[in-house]
Length: 330
Image (tube, rainbow, N blue to C red):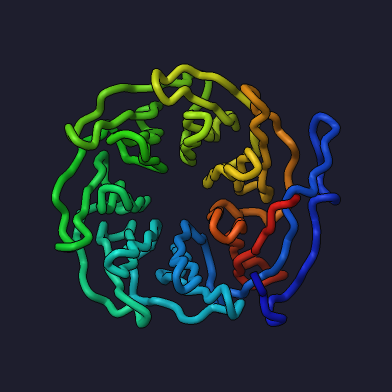
């Protein structure tokens, strides 16, 4: 994919970072930085419109969503008037962007090329992570003191709530069953939910750690990966029975976690200012190393179709807020 010269810098930075187990760390090459404009404060989650190659950035501290044209390498526009946007999700069959807002619990809907405002769904409190289910044509949003809302993208309305024992953070959908796995840090658990029945059916625990925020689902190994913050640990759960199969040390303040199936890798972005990199080798998970970002950089999005990791870097006194584009290597 071609990235235009307006992108600020091209550099390979992996070789300058630390390593574990004698492994080199040039597993991510910093390909570009795309400025987000006058954006201050915390940046939350990201989503992608693959057809138009647009990246959506929840600029929570700015009450806005940045729209990045990846082909042109620039911020195309900014959606304003939001209330602490946390989660974003693009639903392609209806060409609709969903934006979940923490401050007022609303979900704002924007449609088409022009991102015209076409609706609002009020969930009531702390609307957070968004997941799109292409198989079932549903939109899931975690919110409040403990619920997953199920939205119908055709009617653009909430059709159901699934109760949980606390506010849901990251959650993942099992593409081979009607289950979801939900981080519920307030209850110190991973909740296993039957989406058809609309209820929690199992509870997984890792009592040695708390504050489980990011999560990823590996369809190949059939494992759910959960990152804990206190202490910083990466834990692999068996998807069938919740057995703990691996436990590894992790960078501090993790907030996003993704699986790179092509390379059998995991990427974890952490607020301490690094991306931690792990590799699945048979039945083992090995920590390869990390690449530096910037302090407070916690969120990212790995897009397999583009083979890129997009990392949201908040503004500092040295540089404006930007999306750093990493190309996995080799």
